[in-house]
Length: 283
Length: 283
Image (cartoon, rainbow over all chains, first blue to last red; front, side, top):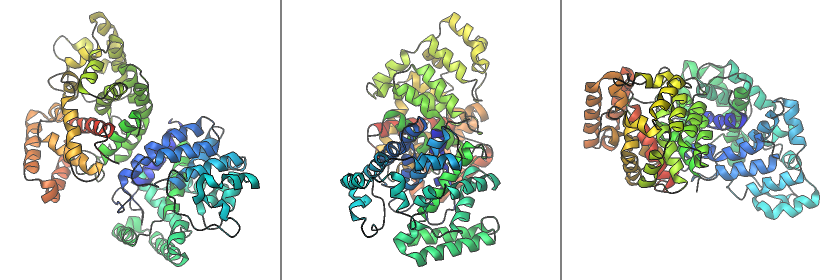
């Protein structure tokens, strides 16, 4: 039995290895500025922060450390969103990896956790949309400059992420009991093939279900909806099995268009971690 | 700057990602029983032992721990030989990563290090040839049962590896000042492309130079020589650049024949580590 921090790092690696994952870096595809090698280095760098969470550190500092380590590579942001899911899951696994326990972990976050989350943005460029009206002082892109406003309003990390829903499906996991992550874990158990083969299948099933919020933020709702509808068509006809060339072509097209469903990859990584921890998946 | 244990883990990951590496698992190829996923998990599992070496543990116990962690995956032996090179290199990097320092590290190994090395064989199936005459009691396949004979003869880990040369080019690195590993690091600096692209180029150059000792042990000297001669032909005409399809076909053929130049991959990983530590290579 592999310890939780190792399973979390391995989840990051198996996620990026899964192919085809339309639009994203995978075992067969690099993006122009973001390559497979960067994801390998990002996963290696994240490990110390994941170990902190496994050893009982608070979510915010463990996340900040994981992001700082992840960012020690030339591709900039590789796994920020995945780590925002993995860190509370690893923390929960200390006690029990279940939805109620991870809910209590995220609901128990503090203003100090929120401050660490803001500091994490100083280590890496994360693509985010403008904050809602009245939230300008709390724009995450301000990094630690936003911490006084955070403290004045007494916002915890849970509060900060709660304010990002809808529009960010990583944040939504925090406020919905990580339901898609746990659902993804079940799909890993039910899928066929090696762990990374299953990563491709689970990714497609998640993408077919809900428009990817990173795609929506970067390219608009219509593109995000189009991508989901097309993923649903491939899923419907079991194309990974029956017509893999069509899924490969879809993957290449999205890469060419610069359409990267990163949020869906984050949830896939979280599901992989849960499946590894529960021994639903052999590697 | 990434710490040495992280660079060592990353070297294992970038090595396996490099493609085409004729005969071996790479970003495009799995073997029937040994898949890319297993190498990812092996690298993750090895990290704790690499950390031990980075923190000053003796070579033998750090190696045993690295192998024990590496073996926590279903593919059995993925990176035994690479770790036998990386552990003393990581240990040397505490002081200075140079040939004289790593020589002093391996020459300073003890009988206790040799005992830990023998215990490491209990965690994993390693393909080895029969021991030389008179060495039967010291057959590594006996695992810890061989330790009394080891202690009686007062053999250090360096002595044990010295007795494996010729016939094992990982052991040869130990007795030749890691010369090919350091040479490989220079080639990483001189090659073009991403780190994993360079891994493919450096692998081919090493394979073209000396018959792979794992291939010789499994398939005989003639096959090992044939593989090296053909690698040299590809290298000679710069086929990775000018005719990549030919190298891909060579890679597929060796995989089909079950001819896996694993020793050459081990030296490639060691060279990658040195190149990362010396910042000759960006990721």
